[in-house]
Image (cartoon, rainbow, N blue to C red; front, side):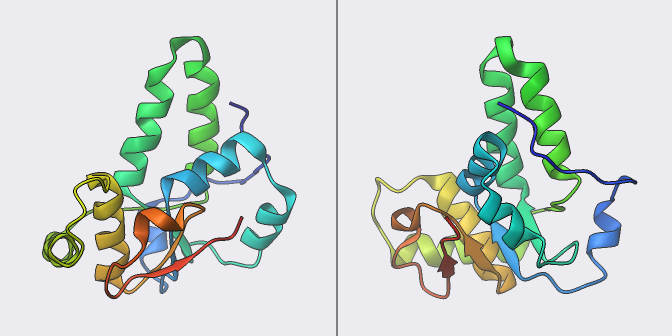
Length: 152
């Protein structure tokens, strides 16, 4: 896993991110795609946004941390790649509104094969009125109130 070709002169804190409206919540698979492939068209698309317009859920961070820990042979490289990505993507915590929305989504789509973490990410996006960016739309199909875009 290579670090994405990002550079930032100063670290960014989540406090800075909360001062402006957020528009997009990135799903885990988009983050992995960005880290592993560095697609030029996606990197150019990201440049259109101000810091804080693109965010991730703490659930996505947990999934990405799992990826870092999964293979000790590439752990340090994977950690650097994730740290680099996180300088551009503030991490949003969960709150009670996410829990309420999770219940709504689980009741609306009772497919037990759906991944609970994906449903939690969907609930996070829907509870905040954010568009979810993913390259796996099937996992998020039919959730009420969820807007999904694929940038890949």
